[in-house]
Image (tube, rainbow, N blue to C red; front, side):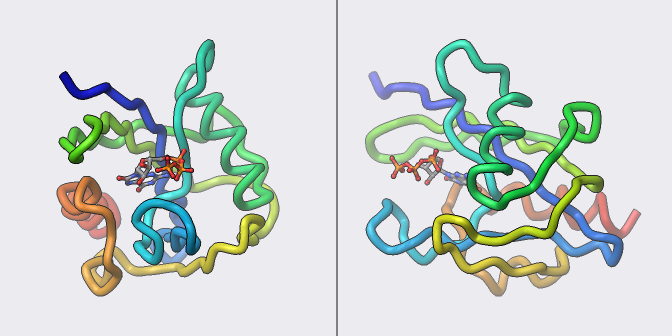
Length: 135
Ligand SMILES: Nc1nc2c([nH]c(=O)n2[C@@H]2O[C@H](COP(=O)(O)OP(=O)(O)OP(=O)(O)O)[C@@H](O)[C@H]2O)c(=O)[nH]1
């Protein structure tokens, strides 16, 4: 049986309704693909704590737990594990995102998300972001 991996991800949305994507650096699995910031939920963590930690580590952003709202989730079978990935939305943070791990960053309109190759698990999330931002 495949191992279940829990990853928390966040769609940061700016005042123009654009979503922040980060490009996976060379050397990692799925290098070059664009993804939502986030990472694996570590032992003893709640997903919200994971995001607060990862957004600081990856992007130098400070986010409050009450600014993280659940939107939807991805459930995707990769070859060697099953990914369960809650997707949160955040519209308020402090700081300006910088790719602290060398990742390229891009603010993208939800209608343009398909122009950026993403991991297969992320594709079903796109319509949810389109609905959210056009509503
Ligand atoms: N942060 C993030 N991870 C995603 C997304 N979509 C997706 O399939 N993933 C997968 O979820 C896992 C997140 O792991 P991570 O970011 O904490 O760790 P990592 O890349 O160093 O791990 P890895 O190299 O073992 O894959 C990776 O396997 C990644 O490919 C996404 O939109 N955001």
